[in-house]
Length: 151
Image (cartoon, rainbow, N blue to C red; front, top):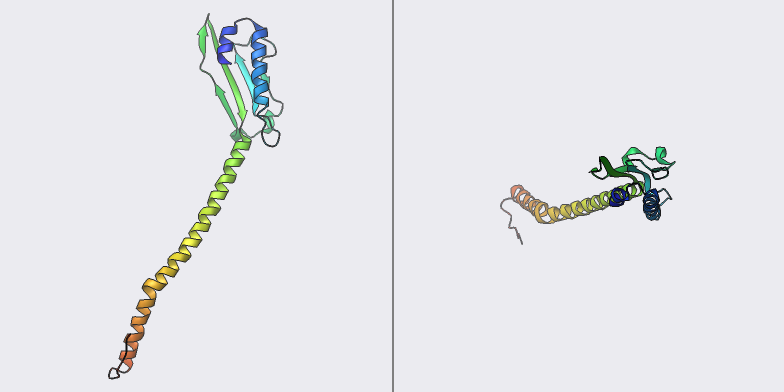
């Protein structure tokens, strides 16, 4: 679209067809709940009436969910040519948030599972032998002359 803007010059019909084709393509990329993906399109320098576009729902979107991408201006014949488009990323942000929640639940589940496993291993490998040794020491301390079988 940026190259078309530069090469269109004063030909508004060619530029309008290109902009409408771009908007049509972006219109096919509807968000999950029907919100538009492309919410604003500005073509500079302004020279045709119906090229620039701003969706009427733009004020309803949170600023965090909007991303504006603009091309670097190219100077030709004393005019700076550029294109700026604003996209609604609400659906992507919701999916990313949901994925983060799933990841947190997975990590929590693994933490509980592995801490239970670690506690069981520590009980079997460390605490049980120490408790057995303490029981043997207590038996010997209670009656040191008795014959003990420590197997």
